[in-house]
Amino acid sequence: MTFSTNYISSNDITSDKKLFLVISTLCLMLLPRFLLAAVMLWLLDFLCIRKKVLLKMGERQDSQDDPPVCVSDSNKMFTLESLRAVWYGQKLDFLKSAHLGRTAPNTEVVLVQERRQVRILDCMKGKRPLILNFGSCS
Image (cartoon, rainbow, N blue to C red; front, top):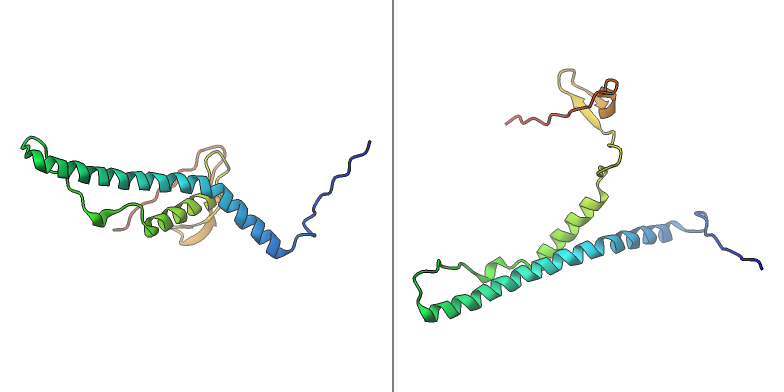
């Protein structure tokens, strides 16, 4: 009994197919997180609608004990703009170069006193931890 396995080498895949595979993999990895965020936005809008109904019901009772509820149609959470912002944020979070538990990226920084560019890890001395201080000039 012999088994034949067909492996696809990287030479067999064109650059268009590689790009398609990368984009489709990215979308499949981001889609569950995006859908969860979209459902949360929808639920927030649903809670706003519920508050409106409760507010209208409260107007009939004229109760002075309850504080006023501020609800308007202009502060919807589940909009196309908010969904685009969520997708963009999820994509940026996924594609960032620094991830928890992995090695730190060795990016270029400018030494302020010497005014020259060096790599972050060039500033390490032995086994001592490297601390970056992000100060403010304002």
